[in-house]
Length: 409
Image (cartoon, rainbow, N blue to C red; front, top):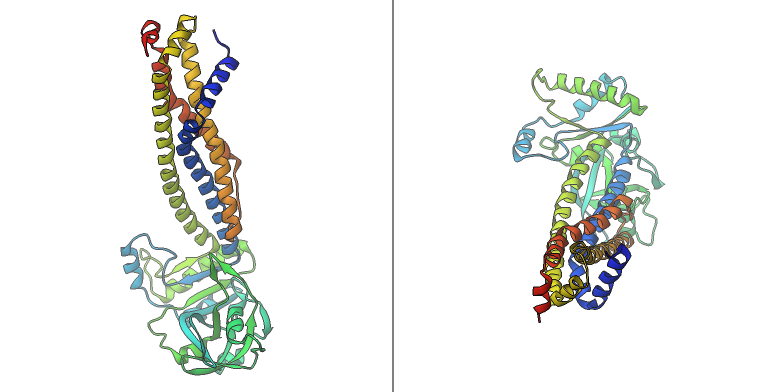
């Protein structure tokens, strides 16, 4: 009976005898495993990136909006469209009725176009804000200038705080402070430039402007536009209490019954993370499913090549049996060839997947996050495929009758 070392040596010799065919046989497994490793790494990197971005919103703040963050069905969207728009009266009610709400702020949003000296920037995110807006949630720091004062809001002054990219594009060689630019035909004075925050998912976060909320209401009809309300608490432990208090205040204002829904939605950083978790989980499962197809195809290729190998080596099998090789020896030899093929493909696939993940981290803001369980899983699954798809060819070889095998040409 042949030992394990001899079986492995014979298997390696057989594979080396057909190097090109062996490599081509590996391609399906390599692509499948590389896809799995790359997907796991990218998804994990995305999760870390999104968590970092979302947590800048703060663990002590929450947002109240007309619409939920993400819709399950069109019916949900239609139902929430019928909700009452939130406005300044709701903000004032929360400010007065929520004892654990340290700060409150209101924000209106719309897109606009900026113009200055023949230059223009389209699709700029305009935010009409209350005086405390820069302190709630993601704190907005300034590169130069000052924040809005209460007097700016009270008198609806046409002043604007611009994002850093606005400064670079409209004021490339001069200080923008106290300079003027045109917003929808009205002239505004720049009083501050926000600090640069960078990109998120490839989109600049510095193409925005802020104007006093009263100025926004003076220029635009807000009757059909919902306002977002931001609330800040002192500690994460008090946030749940503050959320309950704000919910009671708004439900009373909206005259919601016991069995009615709130008529508004409350979101925290965890809300956005839960939404992302569902999205990334779906992406992960779909992509893993597609990668699994490549692994199955690779396994089928291995089985076909091994069947061809059995046919080509029928006489060799007959000679080995005639010289005393047992059925288990032949079975072990061909099964070893199949497992070595698939395991090699798994190792090469892991290397390819790590390289792909590294490239993603180089050319995108996503970090390269490699989980050891994914590496072990890739090699294990590849080896398991070799065993599963190699059993039939190996049994076919071991079942050959030595007399008939010796007669083969």
